[in-house]
Structure formats: C-alpha cells, structure tokens
Length: 445
Length: 165
Image (cartoon, rainbow over all chains, first blue to last red; front, side, top):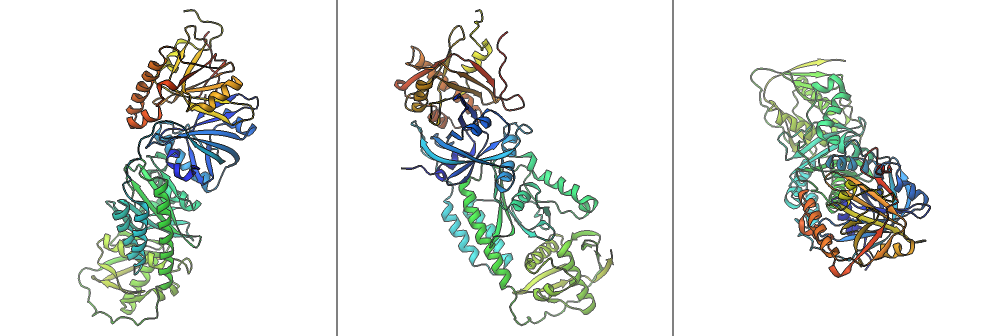
C-alpha cells in the first residue's frame, strides 16, 4: 500500500531529527541532520535553508535527495525520496517556517545560530517504511473528528457573537481539552487585532491589541496562515510582543495599554486565522504549558473549526439588524451618588473613568457617543443600526464587526466594575445602564 | 601508538565516533537516488586508518547496494546532548560480514545510545525499537576516512577537520 505523506506527519515534527542524503556533482555522497521538515501538502515538504552548505550545493547540482524520518511515538522509520523544486524567501510558508525554526532553535539551545534564508520546496516522489521494530501507537487523548463535529454543531445554535464565542470556548475545553484560548478580531483600517474574548487566563486581557506582524498571532494574521509552535520560544513570547507593542506606540502605548493575556510558561502555541470568504475576520489563538501539545492533526481540526467560526461570525453580522420594534424602555433609574468623571480624548478616542483608563479607538468613540446622548437627551435605549450610521463613531467600514466592539466595551465595563453598563435587550439592541450621575469632559485634539 | 599518515583521526575522534552518538550513513549508486541508513555501532582499526560501521542488511539494503557499486560513503556522527557532529567520507568502502564481537558491540551501542536519549526525555521503548537490528542481519561497511568535516551547527559547520599534526 502506498504510504501517504499526511499519514506520517508525526515524523516531521523533528522530535527525532531527520537526516538528508544528497549527491555532489562528482558522485560523492553527503549526509546531514535536518532541523526542520515542514509538511506543505500531500505531495510536498519544505526543508529549511539556513547556510550555504554541502547539502545546498548538492541539491543545486543534482535535485534528488533522500530523507529519513522517525515516528517519535512508534519508532517507525521512513525514507522519503525527494526532488528539489524551488526556494521561497518570503510568503506564508517562509514566515511559518521562520517562526517554527525559532522555536526549534530556542528549544535546542541554537537560538542565534539557526536563521532561515529560504524554504526549499521538494516534491515527495516516494515514501518507504524501513524494516524494523515498531511500538503500537499510543491511544489518542481525544477523537479529533468527533470533537470537531460536536464543536461545529454547538456553534450553529449561537444567537449572537457573544454566544458564539462562549460556545467556542466551551467546546474547545469540553471536546479538545484546550484550556487557554483567545479570540481577536481584525481592525483592518488600523492594521491591528483586538482581543474580544478569552478563556483560561487570570486577567481576561479583553481590549488588548496587537499589530499585524507582531508575535506568533500577528505574523499568522499578516500571512493568513496557521502557525503552530511546540516549544517555548523567547523570540515570539508574549513578553517580547508586549515590548514591541510598547516601543511602537511610544508613551501613548503605556497609558492606554491593556496587557495581552498569555501564559508566561507557554510551551505550545497555535494561531489560526479565522477566515470568511477568503477574508480575515480575526484570529483564534490556543496555547498550553505542555510541549508539543498541538500536532498536525489538531491544526487541521482547528483550522476546520475556525472556518465554521468565520462563516458563523459573518452570518451573524449580516443578521444582526432586523427591523424590529424597540423593546419598552425600562423605568428610568435616577442615578445617585458622587458623579462619575468620564473623560474623552478625541486624539485617539480613549476614555477614562474617574481617571482610570477604560478603552480607546472605535469602542471608546461608541461609549462617548452613548454617554453624550444619555447626558443631552436622557437616552438609555440604543440600536446597532443607529450606531452604524452615527458619524461620530467613524466605524472603519461597513463590514466592521460592530457587535465585537460592543462585546469588548461591555466586558471592559464589567471588568473595571464601572457604574456604567451595557446590557443587551434584543437582537441588535442594547441599553446603557447608568448608576451614578455622569460628568463628561471632552479633551479635543 | 604512532599516528599513521593515512589516518585523519586522533584518539579523541575515535572515542567520539565509537561512543554513544547517533550514526547515519549515505551512499550513491551511479544514476540512482542517494541512499541512507542508520548504523548501530562503530569500530576503528588499531592504526585509526579504517572505520567500520555496523548496519542491518534489510534496513540498509539500498546503502549496501550503493556501497558495493561505488565504494563511496559518507557517515555522520552526532552527539544529541551537545549537537557535536562529525562527518567522515571515504571512497574505498567495502561491505563485509561482521567480525567476532560485532553482535556484542551492536548491543552495547544500543544500550549506551538509548541511555543518552532517555536522559533527554525520549521514551526508551521507542528508541530501542528504532535502533533495533536482528543479530543475524548485521553487516559492516568498512572504509578509510579520506575527508572529515565538523558539522556542529554554527559558523564553522562544514569546515574540514584539521588532522592530527
């Protein structure tokens, strides 16, 4: 029976390093260890090109190579007959391999030694299993197809984005055993991702932002490719991403920075682009304190799940504004007590409550519009539809996920224990609950 | 023992390549794909002029065929904890039956290399499986190293080894 490349992907994880045999123009053989073998698709692998060494010289002279790889779970030993096709020096595959190589280097004490110059793409012509003893494969901790089915079924029933994300995290926990997850949405105009919901962190980090290209999540988002790391990687750790973020944003970045959530001792990370109709909607990020927690099969399952998620988000977005009647207004609560200072800086739409930073950007502009309408017209009931048309808010574009901004704003108000709340009153409608008198201060640009 | 002019290897190299290191070899038959295989032990002649690596006839069938046809071989030795790596090349390789003591050598190699990998967290049973080789299947590939290269990852990878002075 022909051995399929996708069925031996565990061998490519580099747990037991592979070797490559090549031939020089004069027929002299060469053999070298491989730091990285990347599965590209069912017929291709990519090897990292890091130095102009004998292997490199040889494959340019004669493109045929053999690679040996061992399954770390069973000890099964395979040989792949390869044909070198080309080298990629940029793009999603290159960037994915660069991040993964940094993880391998960090894990093997080779940080600063390994440097990716290119991704060498090879066609896999043949795979053979080498005669030898093997161990039975260990039982799988979960059936990924069953988990995927259960999760996608659960997503289908979500009434709104908030419910969709809650079901997503519940499903990841119950069916995949994934305890630490976050969902970030794309703000395309700003070139940034903002955290809208998380699960499994001491501080939720909702409202934190990351630029496209920063850290594992930012690179995966920019390149629209999933990135999976199996070891702690200083180069792509959260501490690093936070420092980069601060450096880029300068002083403003310190005042209004919500720390990104993330495990300090993260050993496995998986960043999955959430796409709908080939457009990036956001990023699903999963991590674990275990080494090699996510394999190729987990990546496949979670990419498939992210596809369902993307479609779900887009569908809910299109469904969210029915022409329904406004619900009866609640009996107005007369706010009492010491006035709450709500200070708005027009420069970046940041809002401070009693001097404490709450939110900025589009969510900040929304809150400022709501409290002004409340102060000037006594309004408490609002609809998504009117916000979408409100010129004060300057939504980046019509496809922007207003619902996600509202979830973010509502969560921040709860987390800061603010005497202001946003409560959903129906599909596309919500109420601003004000428990203390407001004192608005606008700081123009 | 005096160094012979034909040996590239000093006593430290010999200790390294006959120690608990991973051993893999490659050979090319004319017109064919490069062949490669894992080896399960190594011994060096008393004058350090000849290196023999032990292979399983079934697992290394391609390499054995290529060595028989071309005589050219490349063998890489690597120590997992340090990544120290050495490659030897020869052009006069022969496939020979095992000598007395080779079966015991293969067993000792498997025990020693398994212990090193176990200390790095690899599962013992898996390691023993992929290093397994039936006793009656052993063959040796013997050659005189004509070139030696350090392949320890880093700026000096690939540089020829300075022979003993």
